[in-house]
Structures are given as structure tokens and as C-alpha cells.
Amino acid sequence: MSLGRALVVDDEKPLARIVGSYLEREGFEVFVTYDGESAIELAKNERPHLIVLDIMLPGLDGIEVCKKLREFTDAYILMLTARDDPADKVIALSTGADDYLVKPFSSKELVARAHAMLRRPRGPRGLHAPAWERLTTGELVLDAHARRAELDGRVIQMTRTEYDILELLVRADGAVVTREEIIAAIRGGDWFGDPQMIDAHVARLRGKLHDPARDSRFILTVRGVGYQWGGDH
Image (tube, rainbow, N blue to C red; front, side, top):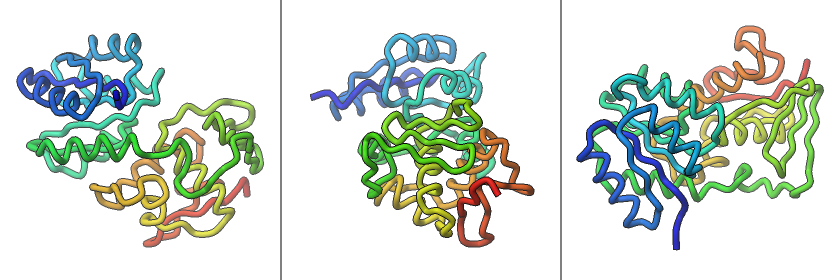
């Protein structure tokens, strides 16, 4: 049984083929390409559920590819980085990637990350939202069934991870949610990164809500702990 479609993008052809073979053995239908332009076209045509994307691509690099992908797909994006550098990780996440993996990596780790992403429910884990439910707070409306957010009548384009974080904070209704609680809600026990990854996702989400950290009316930072929903106050 297929686990879904996966797109592997890496200009190191042997590595790309190896990664593709790992995923094929796990039950994915795999598409492999070696440059950014063809990756975008394949993603449009094949609609993958998971995209494994290298940052260092010739021509259109992985960061630009990720930005363009986020214009039309909410597929899970696992970014491959050559350096274990926090700055690289933040850049990858801030452009819309859901997770990152540092080269060299083991086949077990890659497969575990892929399974962890696809095991995630369509909504935040443990919330049990009715399919019809709409959450309203000020000018923000969340449609739990469509996993869509609207602010002042404008649809906000966001990744699945960003939506999960937003819905979790709204449902907490002003209670402080720690980074670890956010991780548990949206990833369960399948977490391989560090809690500061959540900060990068929140920063991107704030940008989409036009909600700067220094003068936030929606997502408030509780220093050293986590975040809370401030509504529209």
C-alpha cells in the first residue's frame, strides 16, 4: 500500500537516488529530480505529500524553491542541509520547511522523519475538533475542517505546521503554552529537533498575521516558557 507521493530534490544524483530508494522501500511513490526548476514543475504536476529538498542546488537554490513551493502546496517539506548551523536551520524553517536534516544522515533517521510527518493528524493532536467547527477570535476565523484561517476576511496561506500551532494557541484561549507542549501537540513523540525550532515557525506565522513580536496583539511571548494567544487586544 502506498504511503503517498514523495519528491526528492538533490543535485548529488547518487544521493538523490539513494534517498528515493529508501522511501520507495517504505511504500512511497517516489519522483526524483536534480534541480529547482524541474522540482517546481514536478510538484505542480504530481502533488507530492512529502518533499525532501536540498538547500544547496545549482541555479534556483533550495530556499527559493521552498518559497515557490509554498505558493501552491502544503506538502510536508524536509530540508537537507550540509552544515549543522543554527542559522541555516532558521533560514530553512522561515521559508516554509517543516523540518530539517543535516548531512550525512542515516536511512533510519530519514525514514523516521518521513513517517513522523505523515503520521501527524490533519489537526492538532488530542484536540478532537468536530469537522464543522469554526473558531472565531476577533477578526480571525479558523475553519477546523478545511484547516483554513481568515483574518479580516483574507485567507492566510500557511503550512500545516503553522496552522497547527495557530489552532493550538487559539484553543488554549489565553493560557500559556510551552514549546514542549506545542511539540507534543503537533508532533507527538516523533520529535528530532530542538524546541527552538518552534520559534522559527512562530516568527513566520507572526509575519503572516502582520503581528510583530515587539508589538504583538495575537501571539504573545512568555519569555523562557512559550507563547499565549492574546486575541485581538
